[in-house]
Image (cartoon, rainbow, N blue to C red):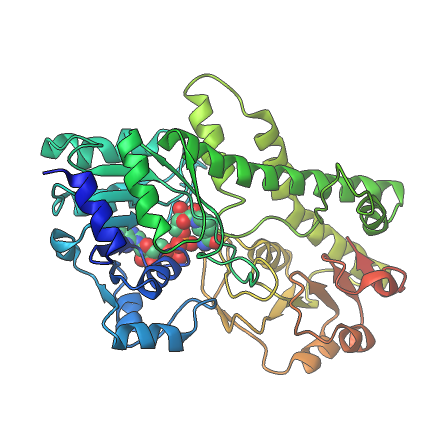
Length: 442
Ligand SMILES: NC(=O)c1ccc[n+]([C@@H]2O[C@H](COP(=O)([O-])OP(=O)(O)OC[C@H]3O[C@@H](n4cnc5c(N)ncnc54)[C@H](O)[C@@H]3O)[C@@H](O)[C@H]2O)c1
């Protein structure tokens, strides 16, 4: 059987049956993109709650409306299951499981391993498997190929097709979506690349093929390392400007007028999200195995990791300016998601900042229109916390308000008017705030 031709035909005539492993921030939008393109899609997740949510026609991802999921489920295009056995009858598997760090800071590929082992039980000739989870170069060839290919005597590029394609989704973004963002794909062999590219081309607007799975894996790491290092640089600029008494925001605004050779990054309270603080460490870990130290990554990571402590010392300075200690003071943390207008708290620097302030004896409350609850988290030394109900009453009662995430729904003029003291880590209050005596801007 010519599996390549068979699959290519199925993609074109929409008879291919699509499988997605992991229905999170990456997997659900991808499943929806394929279902919208006219394919029958099965999403498999070990999380019963997420699966039942999709089965009920609801979305747990802010960027995907429940009405869209409901329509696709009703039309029979989108299914969700906790049972990997569905893969016995599917043609594709796109793996979108988490890739966090261990406590030691080393990559945790246990989710990829677990998902691959489960998938392996239902592996059959003629399947295309694409890993989307960000990982170190070599993951697809070293972890997936032996389990899915060699264990079943299936030859990659002949009997089945294996590739890596990094997800580039940016939660909350409206101008670029899973469907419109160009998709880099690199296969284990040329045939693998061809089939994986044909698979994704059915649902996504532009495919960018590269010569190998490793090149695709490294592309994602370059993108995220670029961001992490530039954020580290601009955070250090903020620290340096602070020492020199220069307004870093004015400097950035002025530098941004250069029409070429400069790209604007802004300082903040630290890195957050599932990608930027973590992915570059996958690369530096891999490099250690070939006795190479990824110096830029380590340095930027050190600076970015320090930022929550810097914010805490800004709060101390602000309170000190009015003769108050941190201990026993009421602090209101405004915005706890890792970036504006989203509900994702993963790796958010707000969690570090709240934990540090609590350790110093402050009475911390928080407000975030997107996060009704902060779950108890021993990693950050945090108890379970609930969003304050009356924002402006909390603003008035707080000895200090710390703007951690600059959600667009906040009325910053009213907050400035009614707060006693403000630490603004995002320049949310702008030029006026920077010159205001009760505002301490990063
Ligand atoms: N979130 C982003 O903005 C983003 C952007 C680009 C790339 N990525 C990368 O994509 C990958 C997935 O990230 P995410 O944000 O979608 O994570 P997520 O936590 O939102 O979703 C992952 C899903 O996988 C499920 N899962 C875990 N183990 C499983 C298993 N063995 N079998 C089936 N399902 C399993 C989880 O229950 C969860 O629903 C990560 O490698 C991440 O680095 C994420």
